[in-house]
Length: 474
Ligand SMILES: Cc1cc2nc3c(=O)[nH]c(=O)nc-3n(C[C@H](O)[C@H](O)[C@H](O)COP(=O)(O)OP(=O)(O)OC[C@H]3O[C@@H](n4cnc5c(N)ncnc54)[C@H](O)[C@@H]3O)c2cc1C
Image 1 (cartoon, rainbow, N blue to C red):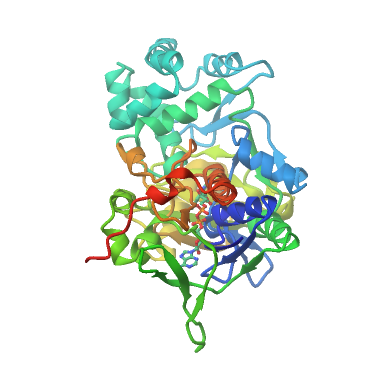
Image 2 (image 1 turned 135 degrees about the vertical axis):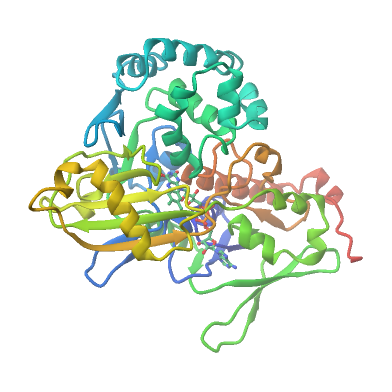
């Protein structure tokens, strides 16, 4: 079957990959001139890469790791020591670590927490452990129920001292969804904690050995094309054209550079667009349907990714760092962590600025100036004195709407991959899967969409004729 997929982010490419495996012919049409969506990267005039986001791969990403295996590119994941490293704002330039010993879960996680005495007192650790008991005992069912609370509300409900939130969970909340604990759903942090505590290597982190576009998206495209599929850039979906019964008749693709718009048709259609552009492009008659109305409950959160090249080495740490700065979330010295960006003499810091709502409309110069002030606290030894470090150049990449904002109650708005329309499916990190808005979630959503399509193609499900008819009465 010929399957047309709009969007060449991880969800669209993963959907195409698994459709090839199932013997179908995917055609992926991407709006931009670059692959990867939120993992897209570009080379500047000096040949240096800059990226949409600082991306970390976790041991708790089974579908992503499986994909690397299937593409035979596992050696591109550079696994780091099993630890989490936090800056200590009260002692500028110092770090506190949670080191996970090489023993089974959850004991390795408990030992990591118990051995760290810089950030939490014994009393705080015990109260936090007791607060977590219902999640440990009742599992994912409890975790999902807690979607009604923000993390701050959940902590208060469990009588966990507010200092625990301040010390550890502001940093984790910003890292997971680019927002603070008073906004993020408790389900998000509980899901991550559950995975990290239950799987021995769940919280182990890897960096890709180069740009995600070259090192992950290109092998995906090679796989898809070798299997008879196609991937085309500069092909923006402008309109979804409908048949009389409300199913999809074709995709209208906007002509660029003076070219005419064109209609492309297939047997099956997939949207692998992020939720925000999908909402804009939905045909009016679909907007009346409850299934699509729910999308109104989802909205992308702003985030900014910074790259700063310095005239010297600021740190030798080869790992992700939780800044615990009010302005920044996580950061890494990519000259240490990533093979293709390696430099023995100079640092390239990649930093995530979050929450970014107040910064997204500011100029790059303002953003960089504020970040330099933060770096003075993170690296006091390099920014003061007679010979302070020099910023050689920078790139600022703004994403005004990135992953869906995971505030309380959002789980019930996330749609499944199979829609009520007989020939239209959804993929994307915002669609329902057990992972959150993440690379793992995107890959899994594409795989699930491909699975639904392949299954429906083999044996049209008895309920396919019962799928909700679309009212064409406006
Ligand atoms: C700063 C930042 C840091 C992150 N860090 C991490 C991390 O460390 N770990 C992690 O797991 N995840 C991380 N993420 C999240 C991760 O990048 C995303 O969850 C994932 O890449 C989303 O993939 P997707 O395919 O669902 O969506 P997208 O990547 O957004 O792909 C959608 C594609 O659709 C295209 N498109 C849009 N409109 C049209 C149209 N009209 N026609 C055709 N194509 C269209 C877009 O151009 C895009 O290519 C981070 C994200 C950001 C922004």
